[in-house]
Every structure is written in structure tokens, then in C-alpha cells.
Image (cartoon, rainbow, N blue to C red):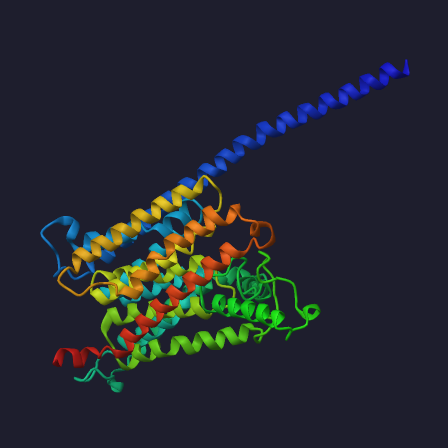
Length: 459
């Protein structure tokens, strides 16, 4: 009698377990579907703000170069470059984030400063900063421009500042806007004594110098050089193999690591490098004012400099420079050249975010469509000007094709895949770092050599 009872008990237990699993599936699957739908549609819905911001930015563009055809007009080209931006599309709608909404706030803030609605621009940027602290990258440009162009109400004929035109009322107004937004955002955390916890999560210095995939910046080149020197040192028996740490930089883990040959980099060192890189652009914004376009150049250089030298930079942060650079690209041929190099290289550096086989043809096709349109439309817009690329720039951009073939179609079938799985990411990061560094340097040269507004008008 015991055996049947045991069997009956076991049968009841398995029946209960099966029923529990079935109920769990019934509960979880609809919930998952509803969550997915909410996420997808909320991203699409919040993009309405981005579309409106693009519309406002297009109003700020000079239409003197407008052609007869609609597709040749600068405003049309700009709207396509922003609305169909490849990087924003894959980050938001495939990788899934809310960057479109945030960039909408940033672009709308920029548009308001172009329209001389400074208080609105300051308010929008303050709100943006409390939504995501990565926009601290461009805060110096906002601070200096608002102080220079709004708090000082007049300039001398040569463009230099008239010191007696300082307005305390405007400074207090700006300060009040920033204070109220900050109080509304951080007040609850302050009341609950959780502010230190918030800042510890906003600035996680223990995560290491670089992300799991190196963002294509100066530190990627630095890491690669350290790797090469360590290999050479081992070959020449100048280094002790037992004292060299394992490949922590290329392990794919988010952690701190030590360099082998070159000095290890600290958060303070990256902060100093970033400030040094930003200072010339801020100096030009103050002493060589060029109006809202000068502010936009400074903003882009602040974003690029922070991307180049910042601590634990994510690869998608390159969009902070690419999207604003779109506004400059339809104004001058030189800016169009910088934009095309920066956008093509920066967008390609986002490829590792989409790493599954079904996503491979999607990302290649989308990037080709955007890149071909960008180059052809800007070449048409500046057809009376010089060539947008020299032979070296053309050769570099064409090199992205063989790099993709090597990383996606050749390397997976080699024996190195198991022993050196990090090589495709390393090659992508280093190659793109060269292009982004070049674009940063080229833009900086144009800003430093451009005369202020006053001298430009006299000429």
C-alpha cells in the first residue's frame, strides 16, 4: 500500500509543479509582451520631441545656398541627416534607449540660443542635465556662452567685451532657473539623505578607464600602444612574463586594470587631460566670439574632447558630437568634410553594439544608406567648392570596408578566434580612434584660425 501512496503523492507533486509552470508562463509572457510594447512605443512617442527640435533647428539654418530642387536645400539635407541619423536609429530602436528624447532637448536648447531666447535655452539644458549627467560634457560651452552673450549685453566695435555692460539681473535670472530645476530634481534625495548615494552611482570610478569595448578615443590608442610595447618587450626578453598581468584590458569585463609598460591612468589624470583639451575652445568662445555658430563649435569640441580623454567613456557618446555637427555641415564645405569623417567613423564604431548574425546585414545596409546619402547630398550642396576629401581622407574612409570584411567574415573562420577573441574589437576601436582624433584635430584648427565676428565683418 505504501508504494501506491508514494506514487500518488509523487504524481500529485508533479501535477502541481506542471500547473505552476503553466501558470507562470501564462502570467509572464503577457507581461513581457506588454513591457516590450510599452518600451517600443514609448521610444517612438518621445521621438516627437526630437522631430520638433529638428524642425526648430532647420529654422536657424541660412538658406542662401538653397538649390532649385527641394532635395538640394540645406534645410532638407539637415532634416534628413538628423531624423535618419544611423547612430541614433540603432542605439534607440535596435539597441533600445531613449537618446532621441534627450537629443531632442539638446537640439531644442541649441535652437533657442540661435533664436536669442537664452532663458529658454538655459532652462532646457538644465532639465537635460538632470535627465542624464553625460551632458556635463558640453556644460562649459553653455556656461561661457550664456555669460558672454547674455549676461554681458554689449560688445566693443572690435568684438571684445564691454565690461560695464554686465547685468546682475540676468545672472540672477539664470541662477534661479538652474537652482529651481536642480532643487526639483535633487531635493527629494537631499531630504532622504541619499545624495551621496546618487553621486556614487553617477560617477562610478571603479569601473575602470575603458568600457568593455574600448570607445574609439585617445585611451584606445594608448591601450593599444601599451599592448604592442608589452609584446615587443616579451619578444626581446626585456619584460618578465610572470610579472605581466593577464589580458584584463581585453577581457570584455568592466573593471580596473593596470597597464604593462606605459603609466597607468587615474581618474584625476583623465580629468586634467579633458580640461586641457576643452580650454582652447572655451577661450575662443570668450575672446573670439562668433555668435551662436561659435557656441555650437565650442559645444562640439567640448563633447569631442570629453569623449577623447574622459574616464570610462561609452562608444555611443560620440553622438553628442555627431548630431550637433550636422547643423554646421550644411553651412561650410570645411565643416561638411569634418562631419562626414566624424559621422562615418563614429557610426562604424557603434557596430559592436549589434553583434548577432541577424543584425549584421541590417546595420551594414542602414549605414551604407546613410553614408551614401550624406556624402552625395553634401557634395551636391558644395559642388562649387573644393573637394570635401583629400586623397588621405578618402583612403582612410574606404579602409572601413576591408576592416569590416576582416572582422566579420574572415576572422571568425581563423584559428585566432578562440585564442584572441578580442582582436576584431581592438582593430575596430583603434582604426576608428584614428579617424575621430583626426576630425577633432581638424575642427580645432578651423576654430583656432577663424577670426572673430568683428574682424570678419571688417574684411
